[in-house]
Image (cartoon, rainbow, N blue to C red; front, side, top):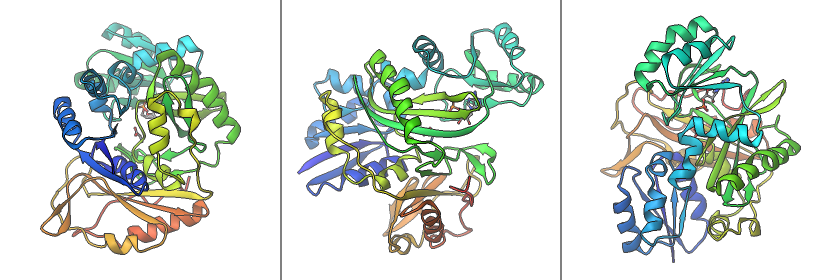
Length: 397
Ligand code: AMP
Ligand code: GLY
């Protein structure tokens, strides 16, 4: 029996665990990401864990991988604290891209109010980016210099003065993933798209993600190869990066440009990605820990996958938890459907809501329109008192 520990308890981690449970002799354990590195180390030793995977960025930034490695635990998949700077320090990733000649938005690193105001005047439509981690909420995309100036005070109060001021880019967004072993990258051969805004038509506040799908049709095989060769491999070789590598891109009129790197799998992109994989990630992850990721493969099914997030009304600001959920089993009876749990708890024999984003209804089918229909059909089977909020336009544009 292979015991695999996943740090993290959201939809992404459930999807990773579901994929890894395809190995018939595997047992998956989950642990809350808030646990200290010491507690996780003790659990790994007590349970004789064979492979540990860290899902979210926060424990990575705290240095959980470093701590476990220093305590003699080597089978940990994820970047060290230093490598996580790719995501946790936007000044660092900006400099790295400059050094490697990777296309990105023109930007200025600012440390003082004076610099910020000067930088805002450089771009017709500025973007303000907090330097550190902010759960996807540390970015303000502005339509004018005036708007940026007006929003500046609130932004500074929330995040302080270390701010990257960038030019606003226009184009379709997509994300690309790979498994890096310090030297090489085993890429996912399709791109994904996620939906960060709360409401249809990409309006409303930013969220942790309201849905995702893949493959993204406007990203060709040729473009994916170019991104692997000209972006992912150079970054991995320069930083000896190990772990899931996430490149957030925008397809501008001047070609594809990077908007961010993340040091983990995307959530909710992992959900459709896991639905498309033919096999368990176990072998690629184990080989990547030995620096031999290219000796494995990531074979994908033909067809497409679509994930619709069911959120509580009032999310992301305020919402009620502890509501009883019905219909999950019925949804999963539909062929090609898997329901991943993002914010639930099992209490007195039934599922209850336990977070703003509750369930990730994810489908697999032979084509994207079919996958989309299937996901919405399954979503309609699931209910809570008062109903869920979900977007109706996932995978439509
Ligand atoms: P990030 O946390 O850097 O991914 O930014 C969050 C979101 O802000 C991205 O998914 C984009 O939609 C948007 N964004 C970030 N940078 C830019 C930019 N330079 N131009 C336009 N939109 C951007
Ligand atoms: N899907 C966006 C993220 O994981 O950051």
